Amino acid sequence: MFKKLTTFLKESKTEMVENVTWSTYSELQESSVLVLVASLIFALLIGLMDFVFRTGLDAYYASF
Image (cartoon, rainbow, N blue to C red; front, top):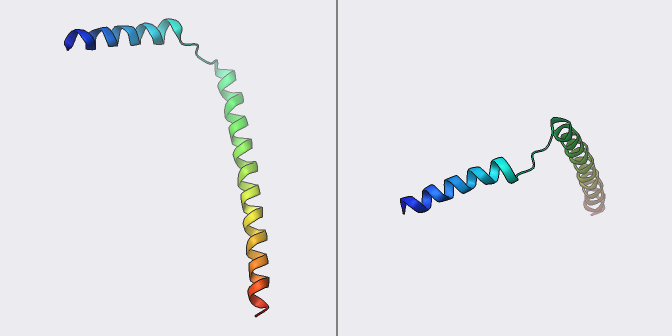
């Protein structure tokens, strides 16, 4: 059991140090800006849909 754990930890370290490709700081900044802009656009679309449905339902219920 202990040998398997030791082997796992050693292989994990090797994988993280030698095989993983880490993003540069500028790539992370670009990705963060992209996620921020996409989130804002998505929030605006959801807000617009909410406004349209709420206004439509208010008008529908007011007709009764």
